[in-house]
Amino acid sequence: MCEPATLVVKATLHAIKQTRDFIALVFGSWGLDDYVARTVVSELATNAVRHGSAPGDPVIIRAYLLDGRPVVEVWDKSDAQPVVRAPDPTSESGRGLLLMEALVHRWGSRPLNGGGKVVYAVLNSEHA
Image (cartoon, rainbow, N blue to C red; front, side):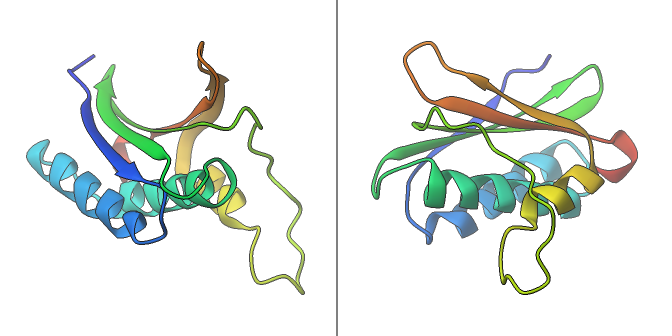
């Protein structure tokens, strides 16, 4: 595993662009395409800001390589685990995790010792 690249943002919707820009820089430094990674971090960071944090709380973004696969993590203060919902054709939201699930090798979450959680996505090397 390479040393994780880390960004800490405040839980605001304006921070989502910061997370995409950060991932673009990191993946660029690795010589990898960042399109899927920017989509994934947008979804994870948006969920962390909207559902996992109070306004202004810190949200941590990490990216690293594990056995040649890029990994993107988002840490927030909520203990609630993410849930993939069945798509509702009348809803304007709620499809992000389903979309992300289709784009990545695997994803999941784990609790943090001091409270909160990490939601991570392991990307396919060919789609990184």
